Length: 156
Image (cartoon, rainbow, N blue to C red; front, side):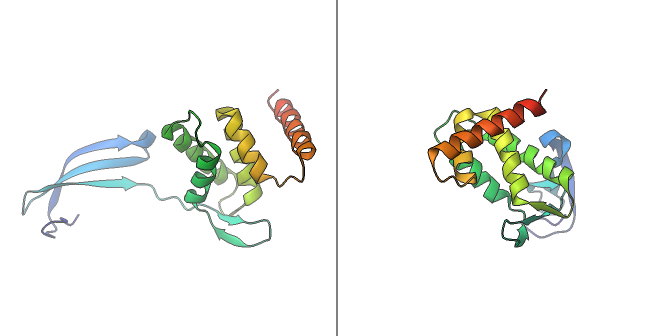
C-alpha cells in the first residue's frame, strides 16, 4: 500500500478490525519511510444486477435511489440511520438472491414496501402512495387491503 503522504511503497499494518458483520476490514497503517499513520478500508465488491425499468430500459442498480426513496418515506419519523441502512442491506441481499444479472424495478419496489411495512406503518403508506400510481382514494384503500391480505396469507 502506497503512503498517501510521501508516496513510499513500504507500509505496515499496525491494527486491523472487522466492520459490518465481517464484510469489511479497517486497517491502521504506518509508513516505514515518513512514519505517518493512515487508515485504509478493505471490502468485498459485489456486482449488483441491472435494474429493468417498467418501460423496458435497463440501468445499473443505484443504492442512492433506494436511499432517497426510503428517506422520503421515513421523513420526520422516529427511524434511525442504522435502521435505514439495515433495510438497504437487506434489500440488496434479497436482490442478489433474486438474480445475479437482472432484477425488475417492480421487484425492488415490492421489497421496499415489505421492509417499510415492518419498520414503520406511516413510512410504508407514504412509499406505497408514491410507488403505486393511484387515481383516487378508493383505489388506494382497496390496493392496501389487498396487499394486507396477501401479506397475511404469505406469513402464515
